[in-house]
Amino acid sequence: MANVGLRDRPRRTVRDRPPRRSWVSVAGRGKLILAGIMALLAIVLYISVANGKDVYVVKAGETVLGSIEDKALKDQILNRLAEEEATRTGCEVTVGTDVTVEKSKPGGDMKDLTADELAEALRDNIVLVANGYVVSVNGKDVVALASEEDARGALSDLRAEYIRTVIGAKASVEEILIKEQIDFQEKAVPTSMFRKRPEAVQVLSRGTDRILNYVVQRGDSLWVIAQSNHISVDDLIKANPDVKPDLIQIGQNISLIVPEPYVTLTSKEIVVSAISIPYSVQVSQDSSMWPWQEKVTQAGKNGQKEVTEEISRDNGKIVSKVVVSERVLSYPVVKKITRGSKQVPTMGSGSMVWPVQGTITSTFGYRWGSFHQGVDIGAPRGTQILAADSGMVSSACWNGGYGNCVKIDHGGGKVTLYGHLSKIAVTTGASVEKGQVIGYVGSTGVSTGPHLHFEVHIDGKPKNPLSYYE
Image (cartoon, rainbow, N blue to C red; front, side, top):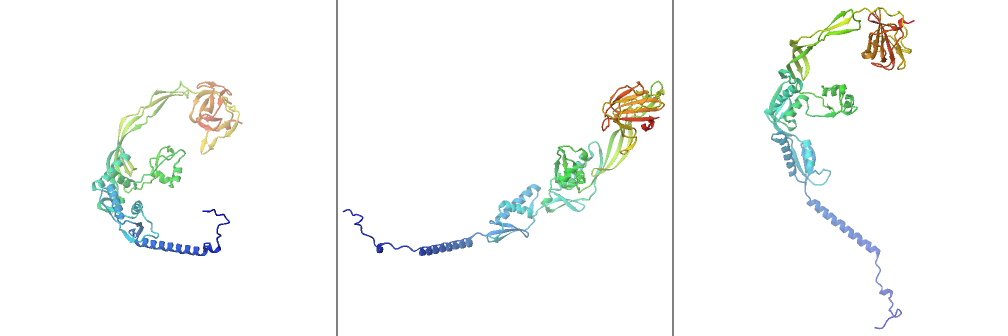
């Protein structure tokens, strides 16, 4: 074949070109296709709905619970719930509520229930019934048990628990009675009333078998616990009669359920106990001893007697206590004391020096609801304390609320007292001169700060110390 150049190629004319497609015709055909697809989908949806499965609406009484696809699921769940309660109660259980299923079409706002959701809804909306032995109190049905033996046994357990926790092993029980009218009857009741024997005892004695405890934390008080748990302090005390409000301890269990017993147990018990008979004190005088000196010539010893009491209680609370008899087991031994009666010679000058340099912070007389028998003189700790007058030290030792304390007998019935000393500088029986150092200011005993508590006594009666100074 001969080569054909560009110049030699035949030229395509307008008439030889393929015709140009119209965009308008393409869009038209797309609309037709889309319309066909939509029509096909509508036909498929119609066929699906027309041939779809029915659903079933479940009702408990007049309450609509939801819908299920398998109507047999209702009976399966009911049977399972009845079996669970039969196992718990030990009785044959039936359904006491009319549960129905009604055929319906799918769709709408009805909730589709799973098996677990249907079981939960049925538990909340149906009553399961069983024949049991019901314990009634004053005509009110309180609790049901599986057998008559269990029902009567619960009452026996109630009495036994009362003896164990309230009366105790040391008492002899004369009688335990229940105030209320108790009846037993076999009848069909909701299974929610059924309890085992220990739970039935709890219901009868506390009014509930709920146990709700709180463990005491650091910083807790009954008020804090009551506020946190939305109950009153009075109710908290009622729920815990054995708890001392101001002595609760970290880790202690506090009950939050206030008991409202269905029954009132009344009891009579005989308690035999040994009671101490206190000894008496016999004091004799010895003129060779100073008045502040004494010696025990015979030690005292308490006696004992056996006391028999009859105690009556209502739900543990003692309502009466009567002594039936008493028998002395041993008699007390008298404590004998010989106390000095030697007359202290008048050693004081009659006038007194001020015992310490300081400021009067509290005067003689009534204060804070009690009688203050001296004056308080505030001074720095360690300041010297002087004997107000000459005399003999009748006591130089620790003396209760006075702390370190010195007493000086000046003769003629006059005695001075110096309290709260940090240190004592004299000994009992020593003679002291007016102005002699007998100790140092401190804050021992019951004291709010360093000071001297100074008293003057005449014939055993406190006098205002300031009346002896001009």
